[in-house]
Picture 1 (spheres, helix red, strand yellow):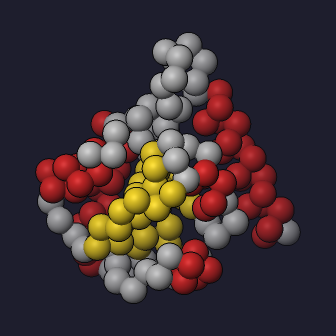
Picture 2: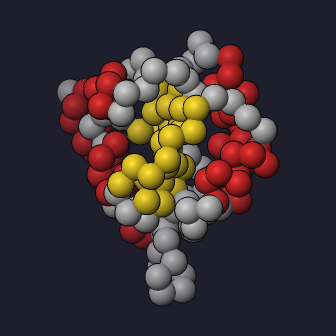
Amino acid sequence: MDEELRRLKMKKMMELLRGRGRGERPGESMAPSRPLELTDADFQSVVEGNPLVVVDCWAPWCGPCLYVAPIIEELARDYAGRIVFGKLNVDENPQTAVRYRIMSIPTLLVFKDGKLVDRIVGAMPRRRLETLITRYL
């Protein structure tokens, strides 16, 4: 039952992403304006299905993660259409956390064209994060 729910959630998310592109300029990404809640089941398809993806690896008990969360929300809104932001709870999704060797949180994983191109570890102010992320646009 739980796996079926995840599959349906992923299918709906991909439909929404595809539908968002109607009426946009050719070649413009369909990035949503809010971070996507990612799981072990849908992580790879989101990373491979978008030109630029930034994944916030976090946990609810992590103080620095709670500091970074509203910054990620703002960046997702400000860069909608250009960058897809996602959030991965490492406690609930250990397979992906192990695969990408997440040893400290928060860790931001930056994927360009499906390939990991950067890893940003630790909490920092918005301007610093924005500079590190937007250089991949």
